[in-house]
Image (tube, rainbow, N blue to C red):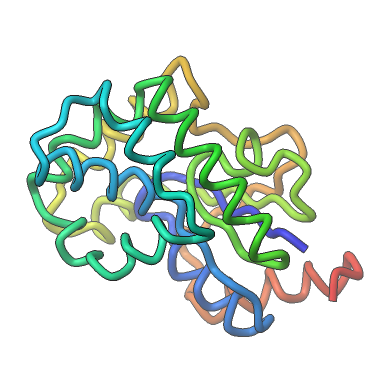
Length: 199
């Protein structure tokens, strides 16, 4: 079973994914870490974007890149990495390399909750269940304190990018999290999974 959770910043993707994975006893994969890792590598090694695909694909061990990204997650959340994410996430060659790694890692995991922005449309288009989280702009900005309106502009660019735009799959269940608490949200999704006979 693969549950794909997509949506923009501040909609609760990461929180829901982690809680669902714990409740279901399956792995949780945050695909945003692949791109943050690539940006971090570019920053620390002074690499050009064009050099990143080869570096990404060289991480051949199952989940090797992902585990390294997790180990350095605090550094991956820094300002220098954030500033480099734009050109990296829209580069077709980088996206193709990341996609190859993502699919390989997901194949190793088996059952998993996978979150990102193009999981249900590109990464795992045959996911067992696809969720797309939304929330009002005001709520999203409030949840991502410190980023201000930049979070909205970044998401607008993600939705309009030519490669793998961050949009809901045709068969995704759209969930508005604006006024829903975490416990209620997790409960709703678990009930949906049970109703669909997925567990």
